[in-house]
Image (cartoon, rainbow, N blue to C red):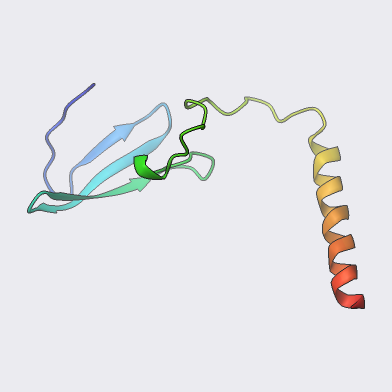
Length: 88
């Protein structure tokens, strides 16, 4: 574990993610942090992580080969659902 001391408005850079953690404020046992990261990087508070969740894994470098098929099926199902809602 890396332990760092930072003051308000100082940042910690995680270049391999890429992400930036900024200390917004601190006082009376509470530290407010701002985290900037790409949309594909999940950011969770520890207490919200499901107990059965797998440990952190890097996202795949390439999308799955059947991605177009999966997306087309999702849109098809969405269209069916919308048509059922409109007809009732």
